[in-house]
Length: 87
Image 1 (tube, rainbow, N blue to C red):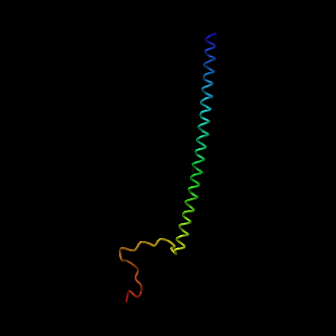
Image 2 (image 1 turned 30 degrees about the vertical axis):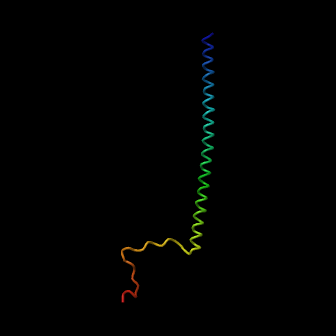
Image 3 (image 1 turned 90 degrees about the vertical axis):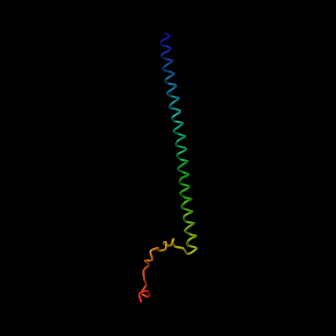
């Protein structure tokens, strides 16, 4: 009978360990999902803030009368000549 009891105990121990591992994995999955959702929410918030900042910058530029950044001055001196320059 001792051999039979040992076998039942081993099966019970294996079943307990399996349940424990499954429970642990489920907890880890839940925590991972919670952290993932939190990160996505924070990224979305940051995206919104960046859009607001970009809009504020554009509004300030419009108030100053600046449509866009001017192109850098030509260093080669190959500026187009006007008809007055040719005479």
